[in-house]
Length: 163
Image (cartoon, rainbow, N blue to C red; front, top):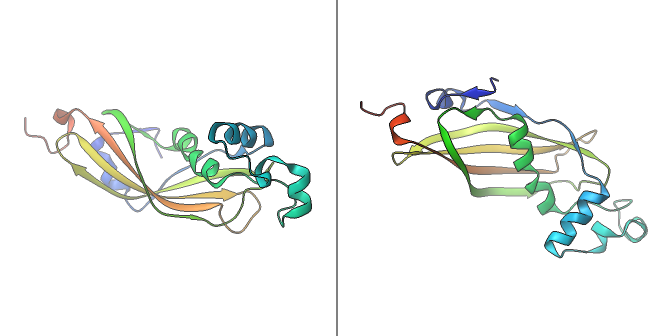
């Protein structure tokens, strides 16, 4: 996959895996920082001793919302930029499913399939990615979702714009 594509090329990638991110480790420091940012200090995330003793996970696990938030980093790591883009907007998610917990210390990476790309208005392209986060060495992904984004661009750059 090229690192940069044009608006005119986007529709040609629909149905294809357009990016696989690098591996990243989800360590306790990252989990604790997320707990501090969200005030979610449930022991399954922040108390390794208690989580090892009282849960089936063998220790702490990442918050589901931490895992899904890491898609932003994964996106920037592996998806091509669109040459004409002026900004990208997170529009939301459909069908989010947390399939398997991310145990502390595990490595994860994102997979992105461009499911849909359609122009909305003069200067917007709405894209839907089927995303999954793989956990290294595990059969089931951490999560699956449909991620909807909006790419903004100057209307004169639209491929079907009249000169």
